[in-house]
Picture: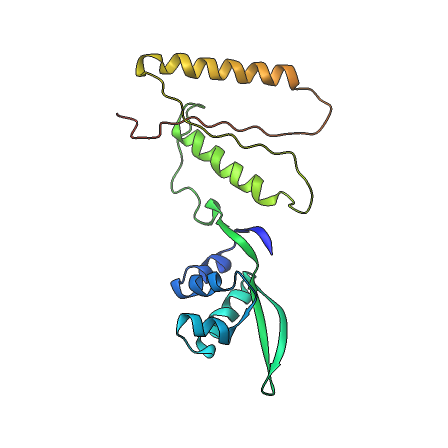
Length: 184
């Protein structure tokens, strides 16, 4: 089972957007048969198999084994991943996003979409150099621009000290946004 499956095809998204299928998918966090899932959800094995078949066709669930039960071969299924991310590109940007500069919300939304796409393709079968830092900082409104200027200067200095044309390429994305309504 993968840690993450990036859903970027309409067929996969369509298969996932049924509440009953999401419940079946949750039950398949561990390998189970349709009969076992049906018993938990109070549904017939045939009804569960219908949903499992759609999820298998969409590559969201895998058949991991099979067993014989009273002369019938029964499939054992498991979810393909622990988490499923929907690509923002499934819908895309409606209209044109006005990205005036790096201080605009449009720029930040583009950055987040790029970050999600980049993370989705990272290979998880080997160690990759990553770090995640998150926190909150309280900045008085009168000092907000000073803080943003300091942040920009610090990052530019970091790029200048460690940047170059040799070595592994690491992408750095920093997002700074108000946690509550920007008008507060």
